[in-house]
Length: 138
Image: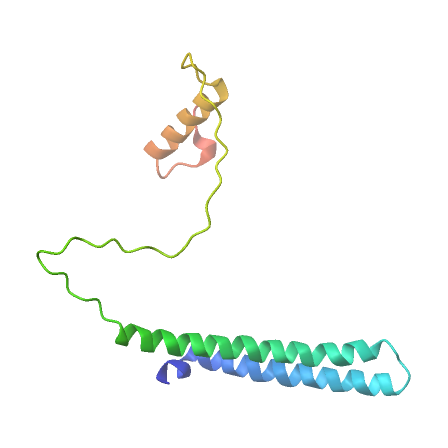
């Protein structure tokens, strides 16, 4: 629970309370406007409490995530590897595949002139780390 009383978390708690009270206040204001004859305010009277509920949902989810993270770190130590066991590969988290557009390379080995010039430019920038792009002599 000490993790929830850091300066960052105190700011999150205060922001959550301010937002929820503000959203509920705006919802009540829309209810009073709707009661006085403004029919559009009926929709807003429902919308503001939904926003407040969303803020509470996100805050609660972050609190649970933080508390589970601290508990999970302590309870799952890495088992030591024995000398005779085969190495086990740890699988990283599931990632979304990256699509790469592949341009076919000409069979004769010729490069595009613009590509060759750009590669020379990148080589120069790599060789001169403090230089600005405008300093390129080519």
